[in-house]
Length: 401
Image (tube, rainbow, N blue to C red; front, side):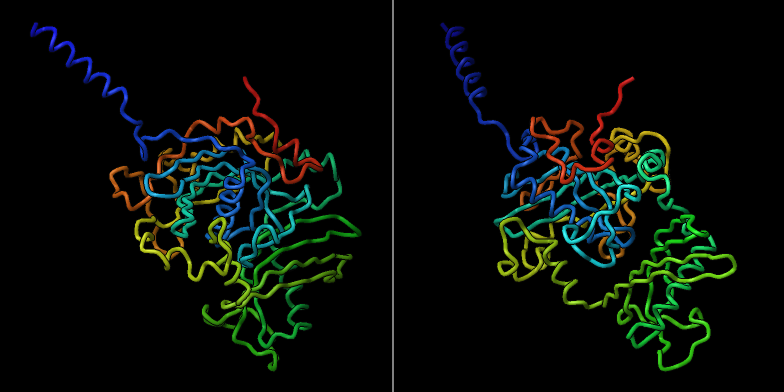
């Protein structure tokens, strides 16, 4: 009789355990939302905006398509999205602070394309859209594809060569002479260079310029001797110029520059929009997420990097790009779960933050980036553009041995 009572008691305990609701939060399974879902598209848009805003070098990246999206609903409110995005660079330098949707993509022969992994926490109820980490690997379009569509197009080259430094200085001299700026500008650094043979070698340069202390009311023989203005007041510019050599004669064929103030109202407005939460208008957000909410102390600083691989004649697929994301910029290996950082938003020495599942429930739970991509049949999503050589190059599936 006693044995029968204990058996019945054991059956009741077993039934109560199997009927318990599944755990949520850190142990909850990741969802696979559709790549064309409105919430996923907004998360991708916000993630890419904040990636561009976090960077200090390079060109604004534009979204080509959403490859994968995993969602982790939180015990509190909101969700963490783990995104894989195909991206291409644009003609806008990141110093412009322009939104990627407002930038023109480059011609196919000069495009740098790649893939970004991003973890972003979005909480509409608390007015938060916070980029936790990102890692992007980019690659110039292989030369053989360029030669197949445009054998005479300018070929990208090392911007450190003397001829490009000279071309930038000559182009800037023409801008300094013709512009209505009150001070002279000097070359800060060359960001891109290419050469094409016309009637002689033609050099094309893209470069950053900085405002100096030399007034245009004075005659200055050597701009390089002018001291730059303090960073808090100096204007920064981005220029595109070209110089053609005709025998012993050199002439500037084009020069155009955009000048940006450190306190440009348009830049501040775009920065605020870059951190907008989906579903919230600019009028609904009176302050940035970090300043307006007591939830923000539990959000770690954005940590991430962008790596550009050297030009190659090989077929580069995103499979090989993903493998290179396990290397840091200096090509030294980093732990697969720890993302190295080129910088953080406050200019402090970056630190690698490992997921800590013991955090209080007031903060989001951030898991390591999932190895398994989205299970949704809608992923990868539709490409934003399908013309030219980029589409088959970017969407090519990895070859199997």
